[in-house]
Length: 162
Image 1 (cartoon, rainbow, N blue to C red):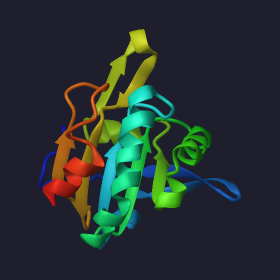
Image 2: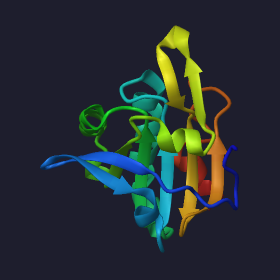
Image 3: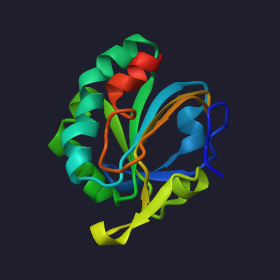
């Protein structure tokens, strides 16, 4: 099943890198009673993800919060150590963006957003998307047709859809 507007997101356990090492983040807890801008990238340190997608949310973070977003979070099928290094390299922490590792593609597969592109070395990765989630329910969903494109899923496009 591919997630759609009006659907409730499934619970899943993400990982984030805390002071004590990898720490679990339950999707249900993160989303409960909150408005979250959730976007996903095929891979940390990949060209479009690094030069376009994350920067679009860094640029729009304050405006998204002004429109009622409680948290901005980025999901990728990478380990939490890579996600932390990528977040630091892109300025995500300074913009208050949370990075979430979906190391086994559990969440990504559960919402039907997984893809595989062996020639690029991308196995069981996430499609590029952005969604606005209110209390666990998808209110807006923008999915790219190609993993190398960042237009519909950019922070500006999600902001315009609000």
